[in-house]
Length: 428
Image 1 (cartoon, one colour):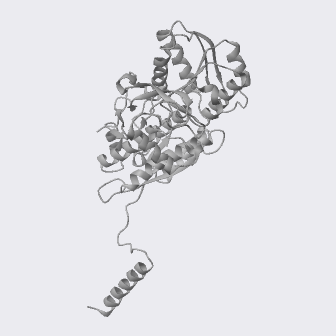
Image 2 (cartoon, helix red, strand yellow; image 1 turned 90 degrees about the vertical axis):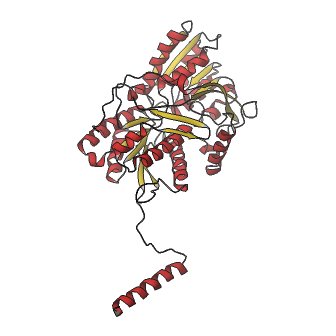
């Protein structure tokens, strides 16, 4: 054995001993690279609170996957790495973020707040994947619920994990059917594809299921630009409406319900998102029994698994203002981890084909992906705002003192709706 080899071996042994003495382990083999997923959301501007709330949800889901060792793959388990990109609430910024994410190695893109942004991302991803299949990416959508995204504009690369607007409207209608005193409703929404879809479907379903109900107002307002909803509240009251149907989210919802409360509106709000992001606190006592919300899950679902799940999230994010958790976002990351493991790689086509067959469960909640249009199928719940501590309201929302009591649970089979999607798939 040559003296050079011996001295080198001794040097390696000394270096390893020095690392151990310092409390460090020598790196004997290169660790598998993390799987990068890019969250593209409004992290600044009028809807920054929605972006930050989503980030907490996705971060917690990623941490759970990594805590169990990452995703098993040939060559070793790989952790997930969550990178955040600020769209600033603008489509062009979102497209720039998409390009940056792809350049940085992300092959999974997440977005949800704004169906208009989701549509722009789908178009850009379709073009990218056709032009550059070696850098193809998948788009996982947790909140952009314009029905067209899994109907006429469905894409092999896009998967939606939220119930779309028509499904949510139908869930609300099942509650409205039982309210025989309701005779006059006001429709109001944000003036873009999603808001328009909510009002359009509300008109259609009211005509079918509650033809006795009169629509006394029907209007759209600019998204994210109205600072004072008092004029809208005045029109709602002047119309004699007993109920308001709205798909508004973020500050557009909070400011609307606050203005209505201050103006003295005593009717019911039928909402998509009235159970979070400041809305319950803004509504206050006037919302008890009068604010209805639909979701895939709510903290007051009465099962031990659900309660433990919610308590674990609150332990991770204990500030009252951080109280915003959605089961579908957790199921989405679980479905992604399952699909990557089944595909045995991060190849976009292979993962997409595995994701089409995803069936996941967590904390007693389950769902599955429908391959025909990539619309996730899951139960829905409808809740009514009530005081914390009343029967069925163990947990409040964001420290407001008000939570949502479950009044209707809709099975995945009942929530499912037909699709007009004609999926174009890559050749096998």
